[in-house]
Amino acid sequence: GYQGHFEKLYTDAFVNIHGGGYADAVSTGTSAIFVALAALNLPKGSEVLVSPITDPGTLSAIILNGLVPKLVDSRPGSYNVDIEQVLSRVGPDVSCLVLVHSIGQAVGNIAAIVSELHNRGIRVLEDCSQSHGARAKRGGLIGTFGDIAAFSTMYRKAHISGGAGGIVYSRDLTLFRNALAHADRGKPRWIDGFDDRNPDGFLFPALNHHTDEISCGIGLASLSRLPTTISSRLAFIAEVTAGIAEHCGIVRPYGYSPGDSPFVMPVFVDETQLVVSKTEFARILRAEGVDLNPHYAYLAADWSWLRPYLADDFSTPNARTARDLSFVLYLNENYGDQEAADVVNALVKLERVLGVPNGGRRE
Image 1 (cartoon, rainbow, N blue to C red):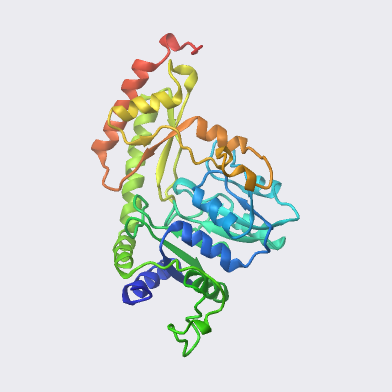
Image 2: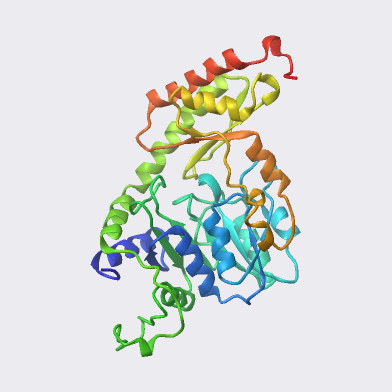
């Protein structure tokens, strides 16, 4: 079943980590985004600002809530947006920002972004799906800054509940109750004497986005390991970063801080020093046994199916450049010094074999 013993233990533990508030476990990260948006009760047809590099589920949740996505660019050299890029895209029809904390890093200046948007009457939904437990540089866990937050707990995340899963979180009780009802067919479970088996007492049409007790048990166990998982992933990234700095000249790491909760590790490539493209370099590296994505295809402006739904044809050039110049290493908390050395050794080997002779430029 759901809304049972293990879900309460799980959501209570999640809330405690975040210093209070309210949480509900749902079936997927996409469901979490959808439910959180529905709970905000935004004007139909209004525009929702959204980060440029994200999962299709984020954009689909906006569209299926009757809203219009409007892409925001990232800051130069980054997968994440910043305040300048957000404010440049604010217009009279914008009602909300879906702020993605991408690839394990908190968005910079998040407190200032939220403050500026609230001053304009714009709501903020934090998409924390890739960055569980990450902290902003000036303190505070992600998910605690905006009006409401959504988390994905699918496999490969730092915090998982099985093959798929999600959490909706807010510090606003009224907003949370609206999310809770949108997550389960409009049921107002907080009302004394509410009869779960009498649909006449439901509030509005809604789907069932809930998860089950087994998934919540897995989530509870994973959540208890989150600090260790984060520190292990950061240690691996630190080893790879140090090895690249010492031994490589064509690739460079993305860069991480102690407050990050890594999901993947981007690696930038100087194609001018290679006889092959960045993507081909990464594919050859993968053939050497390094698990990676050669070309991260999660740049929303590239998706042909999405274009008819967008507010305009903005191409997010900063995000495109950052994506085009990098590939992403997959991470696992069980990776250690040996795996880090394997990655660095493979990079050194490929730079030697595929680098342009005598440091010349590739034609």
